[in-house]
Image (tube, rainbow, N blue to C red; front, side, top):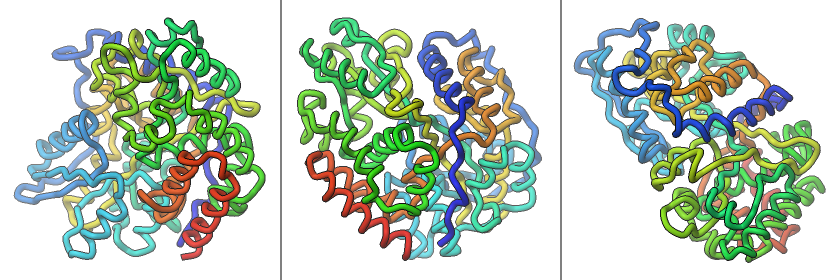
Length: 451
C-alpha cells in the first residue's frame, strides 16, 4: 500500500491563516456585505462540460444537515449544465465500509467524497477508483497547488480533487459562559486548563467533547502532538516511521490527560463525553437558555452546527486558535476529496466540474466552505473576512500539515470501534492508562501499515 511522500509543512504563513480564520468565521454570520439574494456573486462559467441527458449519477459523502443542503446545490448546478440526474446518498462516518459493501454488491456509487487520504490510497491500491480524465487533470493543474494535487494522487496518478478544505485547530466558546466566569481566550495549553477551571468554578461545565465519534479525539491528539513534538516528528508518526510507544506520544497523551483526566472539566464527565456525538457537543455549548458547556473543539465546519443550534457567530459564539502546547500553536488541516468509482463520462465530468471554480463558488457564497481553488473569485465569498481567509489559504501554497489519522490506512485511522478511534475512546474512558493505550495503538498501527 502506498504512503504519502511526506506531510505538508506548517509554516508561519499557515499560522497566519489560522489567526485570520478566527476573525473571519466569527464575523461570517454577522456581516454579509449585502451579498445575499439578488446581490449574490454570479456563478462563473469557466469550464466546458458535455451534455449528459438521460444519464444518472449517485454521489455519496458523510455530509448531513446544512453541509448536505449546500453540496446538493452544487450538484443541482451540474444537472442544469449537463442534463444528468444526480442523487445524493449519505454514507455515515465509515465511508470505507460503506463503499466496500457497495463494491462487493456490484453497485458502487459513481462518486465518493472521501475524508481520509489513507482511504483514497487504499481504494486506488484495490483498483476501486478510477484515474481522473485528461480534462479533469487539466482543471486540477490550472486551479490547485502542487501539494493539493499530490494529496489526491496515488503513485503519481491523479485520482481526486479536494473540493472542500478545513482548519482543524479551533476552539469555539459560549460568550455568555465566558463573560459570567470572567474567562479570557487562552493562548497556551496551560492557560486553557486554567480558564476551564475558572469556568468550572462559576458553575458551568467547561469543555464539551464529542467522544462518541472517535475522529474528534484523534484531532485533539494531533493538535497537541504537532505543537509539542514538532512537524518532523508529526511526519514520522504519520508514516509510522516511529512507534506509537515513542516517548513523544507518551508526552502528548500525558498532556491530553490533564483535560481528559479531570472530571470537573468535561461536560458530563468522561462517561458523558463518550456518549456525546459531535453535533450534540456543539448543541450543548450553544443551544438557547443556560449552556451545558462553555467550549467545544473542532474545525471551521462547527460554524454550521452553531447556526443550527440557533446561536449567532460573533455574538453568542466566538472562536480562538488551538493554544500552543509547545513553541507554536498547531495548524492541522483536513479536506474532502472527490473520486470516481465508475469510469463513466458522467462521473469524470462531475470530477472536472468539482475541480473548477464554478462548483466551489456555489457553496462558497452560501458560507461554510473554504476552498483551496486558486481561481475562485474572492468576491464570491459573502463578506470581506471570508475573502481574507480564502486568500490566506491560497497564498499558503503547499505549506500545511494534513490530518494525521486521515493519512493512515482506514483500518487504523478511519473506522469506528477500531484502531485509533477506539484506542483514544478507551483513553478517554481511562486517561490514567497511558502505557496501555500506547501499546494498543502500536499494535493496531503495525498491523494496518503492513497489511
